[in-house]
Length: 376
Image 1 (cartoon, helix red, strand yellow):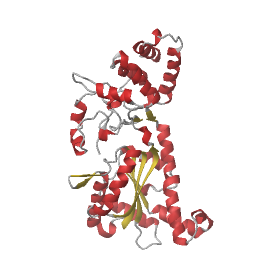
Image 2: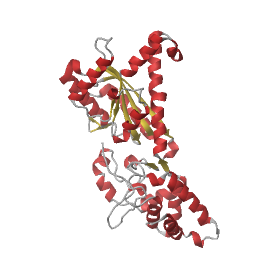
Image 3: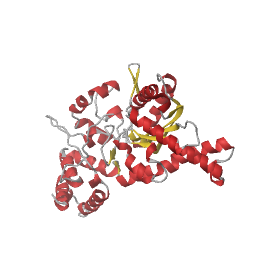
Image 4: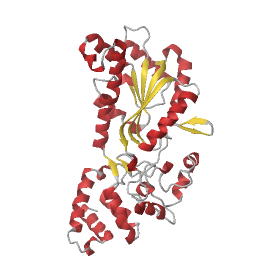
């Protein structure tokens, strides 16, 4: 189906040609063409041969005629889509705005100078470079875009200090240790004293860290256990310093997740068994404001659609995770985040299911941005 056919179908579904405003369809066509070409057509999980306009027509058609305007208004006025270009800008800012300032502050404190004075003397610059090399970057999933991070910082960061996955085997730990020592021959036993755990997006914070049935779970708990096991096995060949500083960075975070993670990380610092790190910070490239979440009364009409067109099969698919979160349905997405967010490579399950759910039951739902299921 070409764009003209898809636009005509949308006009028919929406009843634009019957509207008293003769120019309505043409104005909407312009907006739809612009947004599909600049953003939405780039979504990676559209089915082969199908793009945004065709998908939008199918999505709108699932609603009763009286509900379609509310659905369309949501897409036009509330949907937030993070494109590859926008994500790349967030990644580009990571080292310059988050990592480098922390290293400068550390160097300045060591030498009793101001952070902006680090570049004034060669010994300060050498200290900065040494601390930079002893900073390890670890991607927590494929969404961490480590390939982009490496390419952007080529010549700034060594490939031997950037890892694409958090499950590091003993051989790789030893290799990291050897390369770090080769690059710091003037130091007797150099270790990574700063570790960044990097993730693309967090909406609830629970994938990264949660406390369930008196047990710590999530990616941080797994990483901490892996570090403890590797340190015990490798001893002097293990490359992380005792009580290294841990920095948790999400390229994008919701307001809800930031509050939740701050609370959980504070609790974990005191209670996490065999905690391997000595301090922690939490940062993000973009923090979505609290008003991003869909709420009554501002979003009451669309939230009503989330209830009316909900398929219970979604809850059954996520039952294990929902039960852990004390959640009895998925009408507002996982952890009831009620977000209108779509990332170019996938749609978070914390967004409202009307965006991403595609079911085959007696009460099927049709996705606008079909989600590829994954759990960390």
